[in-house]
Image 1: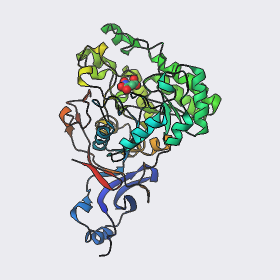
Image 2: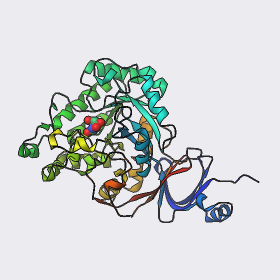
Image 3: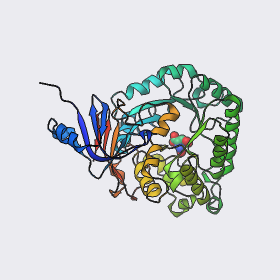
Image 4: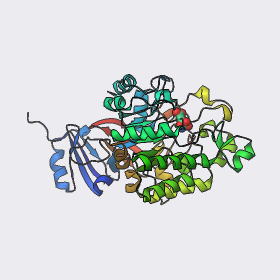
Length: 437
Ligand code: NCD
């Protein structure tokens, strides 16, 4: 028996690969888990089809075929809170959201500040439905005092470092982190909220927080944190990545730093692009409690502007699972965080692409090639010989977000009941279909 030429053919879709500058109807051919070729002529399809079974041939007419999405800000909760999420369940959720690669945060119990824990997470991810890249903790125990063994973490495969969940408040420790990380060419990823200014904060500091009598985190807490770290980045020549940016002043600071040539990048979440703090008083939905908090309309507009003009490099979900028991309480008692892997793409289509802020190609770039570049990850493109990580999207499929459909073990989404305008049809990881509707 002659071996078949291709393992999978995705025909007739609109192929969008921003890394290749490609955006037209074409056929994608997969062999041995890798992209073998992308071709436009339909003659080749008829030829190849003869040797393929039904499972090996996907007709993607009317669909988008794009590189597997990459989410560089995900909390997988393992080890420690396997009731909320595991590496396996988080990767299943990722696959249904169109993500084939994700970076997991180190605020687990124990925290990922040593080689053993990096290895533990990597082992758990071996047969998972997405590729998992580990972000190590900047400081031991994420306590902000003593640097982790950064070289050890990198040698074990960590692709970045962060104390996410907490701002690294000590400027001297942050300076050293940037210097060490520079030696290994990895970014220091910062949760940029000055801890003292945000002490006890429940929501954004604004008219709304005053009206509701809830303690607020002032936007200036982000501005100060971002500006300090940009100054340290300039001083050290290291690489700084600002996580979940949420304010006008924060975006302005990054814009100025980039113009100056400083090595800074940043991400935004769908919730900071879409939600505003006046939602909180309507029903006190605890799934709206998140750090940094959802802000005022003026800040929301500013992050959208930053996304459009390229100040903001990428979109990341900050998928933060919390149990129902913990979220089923008064607003100010609830832990911060919302899940996001399964709603990101639909939200971006509905509230960013359909509103004319970004084209499909620009939005896909912020969820593929840009995050891949920031962390030096493979993938994010369908270039020949890259892993066959592919998402097929129905760009106009309307669907309603339902808690019982989430594959995440946690259901803490403020979007339950929302109607979204695009849906993942199939997710392919290394040539293997890991999700289909
Ligand atoms: C994160 C979590 O739950 O781990 N929550 C969140 O609101 N983003 C940690 C954090 O960044 O506070």
